[in-house]
Image (cartoon, rainbow, N blue to C red; front, side, top):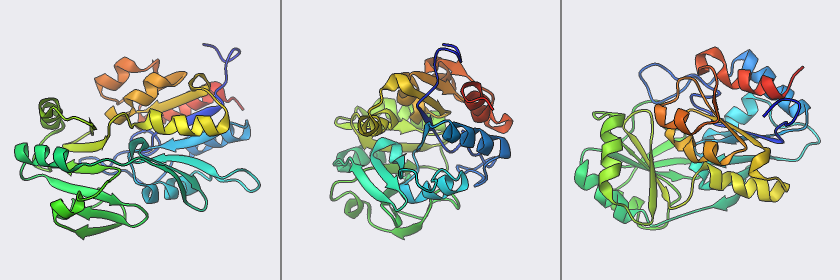
Amino acid sequence: MTVDSWQPALVALDIDGTLLRWVEGAETAHEEVSPRVYAAVQRALDAGAHVVLASGRSAHGMTPIADLLDLSREGADRLWIVASNGAVVFRYPPLETVVEETFDAAPAVRAVLEKQPGALVAVEQRGVGYLVSRPFPHGELSGEMTVTDVAEMVSGPVSRVIIRDPEATAEDFVELGRGLGLHGTDYVVGWTAWLDLAPQGVNKASGLSHVLDALGLAPADVLAIGDGRNDIEMLEWAGRGVAMGQAVREVIDVADHTTDTVDDDGAAVEIERWFRS
């Protein structure tokens, strides 16, 4: 694939660890976009490409990043954004949910807590924040946290459940996921002991597919960039899937290319390859 033969019509971008640098030692990111990343994204927009944020964040945690990047332009169509690891697809501004995939999370949550009884549990309250079994560490969740009994939290269909254990490691949770034998539920492990439960078959690629259908595009038209395990399906599915330099080995192995790290503006390096000034 060369610059002369292809230019992406849609650029799908993870947020934390791709556009935003991680805060060392925490499951949170600096809410600041580097000037080079900002300029590269603007260059893609100037060329007529669709820039779509695709993240594990909730919808209300993504709109501020869209604003930081000035993705919304006067006279242009409203943005498409893929939230909650593909379970929620919305337009912005204003925020309008187009797709919300839900599932019965109760059996999976019970199975996880049997093996990890001290873990924290959170269920997204779209547009508000999260219902939580106990408060999460500072900065890890956006919006309000409302302490709620776990059984009540998963008594009806939900789009996403977060399992978090500050006393465990990411490797502990990888092993935990392998041993659960979940049915009808997918899971992904984050950078720390963080487990996202989702409807089976729902991921960033499935969420982006709704966007492509609406825009009349195909996966071959997509440049996707990400760094986490929740980006694997997206990178495999896109015409060009690019892993950030600091990504875990599972992500690098499925990518078509590996760019520089987030600290070295790797997303900008990749975008500049296809959208030159």
